[in-house]
Length: 322
Image 1 (cartoon, rainbow, N blue to C red):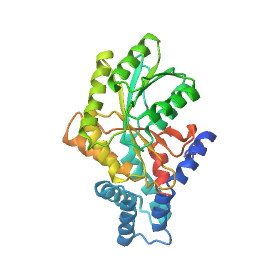
Image 2: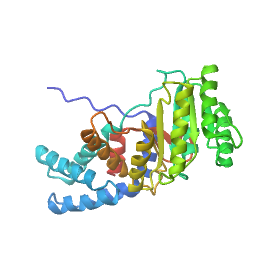
Image 3: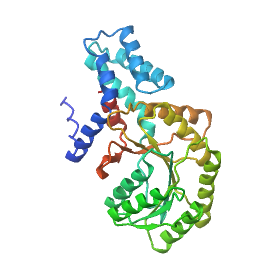
Image 4: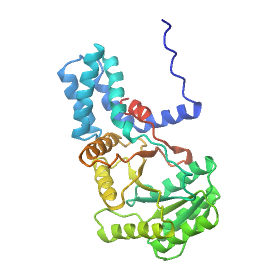
């Protein structure tokens, strides 16, 4: 029987992205990798691995699930060498992350209205600029809505991204965020744009009056287009650990999130929180039929336009496990 063909090598640009991702998750990867140095496959190895996973912010439920799955894989494969177990760990982590892997769909509705939320400092407006570039590269025409009217700098920042990406922007100085969003959706329809990206004000989920403002924006967008918003994205900072999971829960309860953008995986981030988010999504789906895990559409590892890429569960697992 002929040997199976080797997996095709990634395209050069994707390989470059993988290198940046591994560099970004080096803090986590080195911690997990250290567990396997001169290791014996015994209970102590699994205990050390559990500590490393928890230090990476995977959370207790995801760490327990990964370790049990790993034990089963090690037994099934009769693995005896540390490098074999580390390869099986990549498989186990990739399996946990798989429910988060889903492409952003554009084109079913014209325009596709994407509402973007996030706390201050998560990189929301910068991510919108990068997402605009990504969509433009895919051949989409984009209209930006500067609905972060509470912060003048946000409008200015978004205008810079609009100029850089050669796209149009709807903005009002001191205007009502919901009104700006309403006007942008109507403008997107009138101008035949493929995508309308709505930048909302950064806020903490504990600021109830601001969360109510987000709900209002969503309601008003629906008035402009009964099928919209078609996507509600939350931008989360990869450095915030388990707090990122709490943000996902709070914003999902308020807005019914359809996707995530994870930023700042640039060397200090631990990254394991994506496992926690995936595990929460799966457990919630079991408890509430009809609810699905909130996918990660994009992850970012730096400030450059090309430092935002589509999420791939196996790539992330390889980078996470060193």
